[in-house]
Length: 498
RNA sequence: GGCUCCGUGGCUCAACUGAAUAGAGCACUUGACUACGGAUCAAGAGGUUCCAGGUUUGAAUCCUGGCGGAGUCACCA
Image (tube, rainbow, N blue to C red):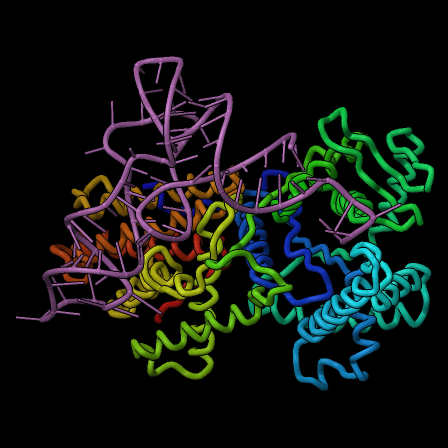
């Protein structure tokens, strides 16, 4: 009965505004597997919040300033020979990333040389000529040096263009982009504010600190001796800016668990500063993605690149689909869309099906398995349902959802499907409260499984009676809708044929 | 070293926050298309929940102590 005009768990606005920040890349190298978990998690959780009645702003805080980008800049100046991404024919983020790698190669050698010359490791790290160039570049940038800023802008634009291509392919978008280059000055203001209030203090060399030892934490640096900002400075400013811009009730940060401490400190400092929005800060912390052989290390070249990963998954979907040969009549365009839907769907689901808090092992071979607890399994269920509608000449959009439960004697298989469908709103709320999209992933899987059992045991088209047929068609329809809705909350599309 | 988190069949994950026979998937074994799509379904085998104590009518879950692993404690971000 509940399914008449049922809106599948959607709630109207509950009056709360939430910002979800995710992705948050550095502009010195391309996105990798870890970012993928972050992005899919953030995007999915934003959708879940929306479905539960929140007004959601999806934000991306790009770390576009600092020594890391200066390193890429110096390397490009020294070794780039004026080349551009267009010239090389590669994405801008990969292009700039190449120079970051180059920097590290040379830097490492210079350190080794200096250490061989009698310097300590720490000294060598500071004295290496290339590092000195980078530091000088940062200083110039902070002093608004025309050339430095122009180069910085040029290289960042390359990277942004590259990122945009990746986001497009992932089918994620943002409502607001913050750049740390635009927020760090505000952060410095907040530091001044804290100094005036006596919450922070200056050390002899001029660096600014706050002492959080009473709260069980350590002393924390807020401003370097030379007056330049650190990570925390920028985050203070960004937090303020987010609130000024949107007057949000909650501010959710999707950030890896290696920053648990940092986020704790950030919130505490803002609370001490008496900021009303501080209490609304929540760190949606997620565990690192590891590979079967250990964790990803850029130094050892074991980082899995996000773009490569996506291509691999889509290629696998293509291969698999061709082997099965069920969509030979598809146009090129349709095939391309299908492969993206299946490949990226499988990848998103693989990353979202586990509790975000926990570290996870990414097994490339298992991730491309399209059986069992996977997106293609669920997508397949959806496609088969659509197949029934095609056969019955029914337009799902026009088919009315009207279950007259009272008159029916439900078969056990039918009952199980109904019971499972009833759980959807509950799963949605749980995912929202627990801040855990994997609840939705698990739900979709259970629903698909329950439906498949029903499907394999009872015929829809050749049902015992017209009434039964009607009922089962309705079960099919609602199942398809809930699957589509649920998977949509994970950012995964479901095809009508595959 | 201090603080935080984690340890569940060969592998990847669950377990409504203390409940009854610890659930799924992969891999393995066996079955099912003259039935709406076999990317499916049905069945089987596989566990001392890291170890040792403790609390409890009852512990994977809570406490203590080990062992093993991760993160963090930067004038990096």
